[in-house]
Image (cartoon, rainbow over the protein chains, first blue to last red):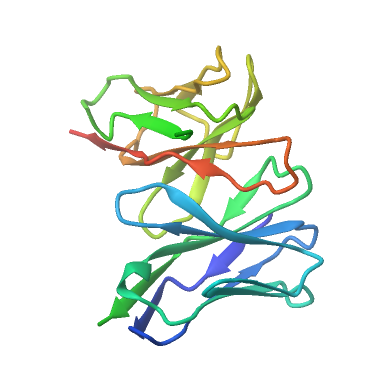
Length: 111
Length: 114
């Protein structure tokens, strides 16, 4: 079945760039998403990319999509301590009725 | 402000009890979802509803039940048949009228069996 995989932990220094990676298996994925979860809270949609795009930039966030390798990445420029959270990669097909989430990458930002 | 409200934030259940988690949204979204989150695992889909008075089982529906009598409300009951209910439960909704299918999530309910 469909699967989304991501590494569980990433540690960076404040001011550096963070790159969180994700791979997915469903070749029919139409939409790919990045969500952020702060401690004890729900998930917040950060950004998304359509499968016919290679890149999307939104302020400090850059999403890169390699559809051939089914690889998605999220780059956070000038990472701040407030960026410390769990980041979830997710994908859905057309219609979006069933979204598959990865296990989440916990980002630690050291001051 | 529009959003999703989950209550209570913390819930304790004794063995053999049924408990109901509340989820209310004022976003006028048609679709609503319940997910379970365990440490180190992704979100697992319990139930979802695309329209009032209709809902479908997700990947881990056993031991859970839902109802969708109103567009705004999608309560989840964790029954005594659910053998390992301790987890963080997240409710979400989605606007089916838009091209982007991202979810809006509530702040979650942490359920603990005592």
